[in-house]
Image 1 (spheres, helix red, strand yellow):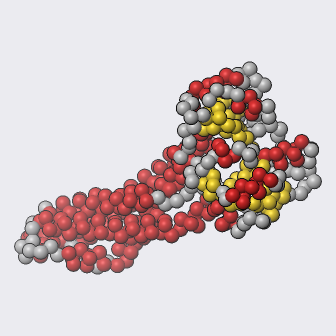
Image 2 (cartoon, one colour):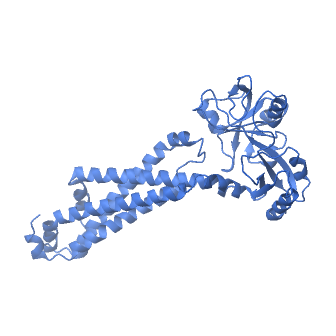
Image 3 (cartoon, one colour):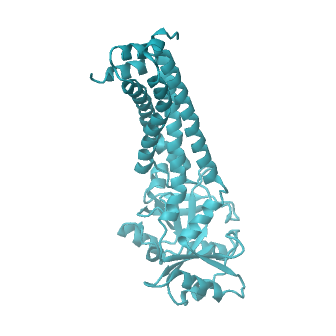
Length: 390
């Protein structure tokens, strides 16, 4: 006898309210799974994309303790160091404190040598080199706020607040794109010499010195060896340093969130376990209500395996539809969530691996939830099934 595929569909839609509620639960569960997995992926993206030939030098006391300006020239003399660029977190905001995004003062003449993944056109590179108030805006940040070359970008300083209460007026000279996840596209880069000029003139507050130095290594240089030599150079002060790989530096920011990755993973696991129980309960109810029908099928000559397969395919079909709906919802909402999380999670995206994982997990839950009801239905005797009262 041919397998009664139509019965699988009819059994799912036979109780529309229950089916809709189960599908809604599955949709929400797999939407949350995709979002949580993508958040975790975004946290790890910068670490995975970090360059092997870059080191970061920071204070051994804290990232928030500035290093002396004189360290840059000394670091450049260390064997294995090809170039050094200063990075200083600015910490301002645009128009309103809610409009927060990353801003860094950098050495404009060395930034692209150390970070070749930052791409700008020739006109922007020329303007950035010539204009002291020039700044570069990330592609995604420009899209969000409508920034374009030629615009004035006023930033209200918090760490480096101007003493006259006015904004730092920057001129947007170009929109950059990044080919690496370690440099996001939601940042503003402006010239370090402009920050130095205002700071040395006593026109703003803020710490003296440099936030971090980023080093590009010579070809063939061993990062661990270079890091050890840099640390040894300043072991007697005036400021002791800690030199790490770019990946380790990125990992520090993730660790600042505490056990958030573990917490998010636990939530995802709990959601999946809860939805497994919900689908299992639905399938057990469905199997119990159709006990008499299974007796009729067996009396007509269908094997016990067919009864098992009916419940198994029903469970798998229900879960796959719910999984696809959850994945689709996650993809639809990704631009909105990405924009909302861009200041703290610039690499948020629903990766193809996440979609395939969610789809595979939905099928697996369908199999697990369908096995127990299917096995119970297989063991039914025809006479007992026909006499059953539901």
